[in-house]
Figure 1 (tube, rainbow, N blue to C red):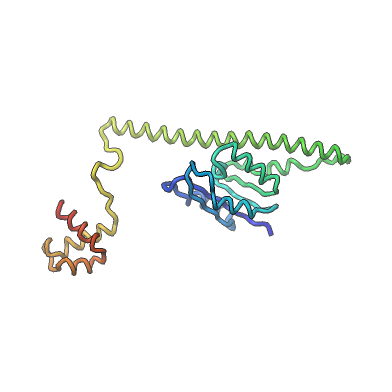
Figure 2 (figure 1 turned 90 degrees about the vertical axis):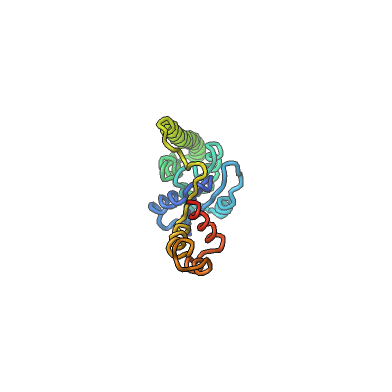
Amino acid sequence: MNRVYGYARVSTMKQNIARQIDNIKRSFPDAVIITEEYTGTTIDRPAWNKLKKQLRNGDTVIFDEVSRMSRNAAEGFRLYRELYEKGVNLVFIKEPHINTDVYRSTAQAPETGEKDLDETLIKGLNEYLMRLAEKQIEIAFQTAQAEVDFLHQRTSEGVRRAQAEGKQVGRAKGSRIETKKTKSVKAIIEKHNKDFGGSLNDIDTMKLAGCARNTYYKAKRELKAM
């Protein structure tokens, strides 16, 4: 039985892999999702390597975009060709023109009646199609990189414009990110602790807040410093 997989990859922990998974599941709800997180400097991809070994003729792998399959166009094409010749179907949601079925359907044997001629034609046609696929994959990677560069440029321009207007960019020096839990603990301390006009001592306030000792006293110190 042929299997359908979806492969999603992010290169940094800050990236959200959910978008890729959603895109794959929207088109292929029954796909088995394989995820991977690795940096661009890491060559080894354990999850992908494991999947690649178990792929068989007729299996399908879906990617949100071709850049999720590999790190660059040259590596992408080598992998594309290897899997194409193995009979694996590759689907790229954002670049459907390079799906393997586009080339595979074109590379059908012409009905000439001459076996040797057919084999020569098929070989030549496949080589032509692979060169075409290689070029399209290269263009897809260039487009993806151009979009990233454009986003970085727009972000940098926005930061410079905000700074020129005297606006705060990013977190102010010394500022803290306060979680919902910390806010809740502080509210309980302010309302119930004796140091803030309440009736409970530290032990009882801590129990009411349901937090660790360090969290409690840190919150209390911050409240007193305000």
